[in-house]
Image (cartoon, rainbow, N blue to C red; front, side, top):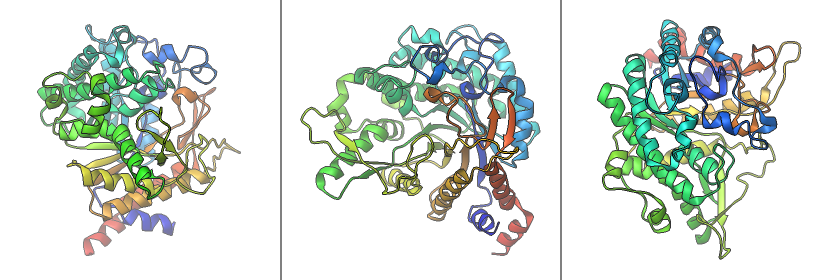
Length: 461
């Protein structure tokens, strides 16, 4: 408990603690109340794409259990809840006719959050593109950016008056590279041309979305959520330093530079300029001033130069960051210092607004024993990463909050339901929720942070 007390006292009084989820991963009710399929509904049913063809058809049944789930969130003592809105519920065909029942669901959800004193931090797009839009080219086609702006306007018109902060999209890196270059996520393409087209269309959609939201509510704090790579060089050799810089530009700069500087880096343009479908005025649209941004962090990266003559850009080979063989159950390295490493790096390079850690957490597949889930490894992971978050605030960087991924075990994309990130265990047969020991630990941390005794102590300082 002393460790929790010391950690809690290192955070500013107005620091927000929250939990995070995403619509397709928890809601279920995939064919109810007017919702039509997304690209993930289709992808998950294709043999060989998702583990055992698991899908989000039922997921955690949050669509029907949202009230008890909000009670559960409230019981954790968190300040805010980050969730996503399902585009296929609002505009089932991607554009055109609005589905009022979809908006009604989020009306009830947000009202329920307000009644429980929870901050409302929605994300407009967390990967569930309406399948109709895929038929027109999906994220490689400019009209998807236009459709996203229309969707944004509909949502903000109806729900924007009760939002505390709105993100346009979650992790465009995953959408562009996992989905369009590596073929791991929906729609499963393996094309550098498609990936580069998607990068520009997503950047454009973000800018158009910010414009659309502000046309309705100019006071709504707008941001975007990026999963940045903490790219360490494999050595101090010039070739490895250059490889790390190329990797930074390829993984981070393609989003950060247009969004925050209104330009693509010269090296990216030299390498991929013909593949980026830039039109006059696009960069001005993308470069909207933001009120905040979110960073998701799970694991580090380290690269060395790839000297092969046919190596694809960024001509970098991955190498282990640490000598430890300790991994999370999904196989990711644990290196909390990477969080502050990349945070300092991007604030040195860019003029950025305040930031939230919008996702951080670990996959450990502990199961209940006599009704108890003793996930010690997750507690250790969270403790180590939250200490780094405290260090970031102490360095003077504008870190305003932390959203733990995830509230509960859920559909983990290509991994299906075999990987568990939640601090709440979900029995997918019965939908029973069980707070893991990590949930009790997190609640203790937040309660200590909020305690009157602590507030009095700080006022004396």
